[in-house]
Image (cartoon, rainbow, N blue to C red):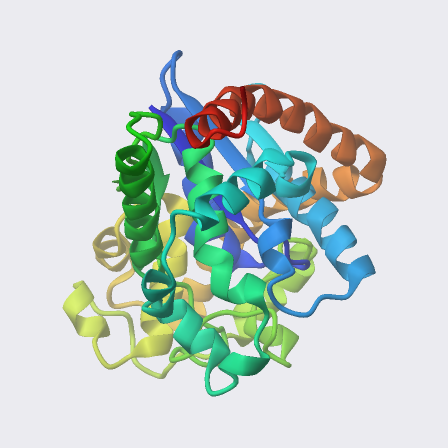
Length: 334
């Protein structure tokens, strides 16, 4: 297997980012065999499809890398890099622009959603985003790509582009990547509103647990998290219509690597005065070591950048044969 996945660099990551994505990456890495390869990249080229502040983008790339390392991504077992350090991403994307079709891109749901009514004022990069995504995975002959519901359409486009390129140029160059199906990532909601996703854009810091939060801050936020007056049920069906209770149970289950049914079996009949301290203790035990590693890493940003460069060197070596073969297929290399 060759698994490829990317994430846009954002600062101040929180519990929802960790449980919803990063923890899944670590699990993929740990499940790989000796001959399998995981490539994880910071999608800084994708980030510029929308307006950016240069200094913030640079800092976010380093902070995201440090967070991935702190959470368990091992650069000796996985290849970790940012797109910009591997120019073949941009080069292959341009070659694939000759194969992709405007009609295909016009049908992309995310393009419609993000551009809204201002399509004429949106960047070309936002429109062409899925072609760069296709290049990201085809460049490494990815066999599997982790995708959520919102990215399935983009993986299908990557397969369409690969198929058309292979047919147009009479080659079998590109592998058609399959979706990687892993344990379903939990959907972590705000600590203040069980109907809204946990987000760094929420104006209330009490709505989220940041991965950089101190132990005392984690305990305080969980203590103040919105719940309800009823006791926990003994089965998960009893959480229906109780979004805040369901969210806290979901967080406990995800941190403990057990099913929500196991949580309510353990705590059923207890009130939140008993459950929240148990959840706080668990969160501190799981997140405290991550925060400590993250703090150390952010104290030496040059070392983090060095880890990115070492990963990029490996990625460039893997990417080069595919890029050259694509150029030769088109007639750009003699």
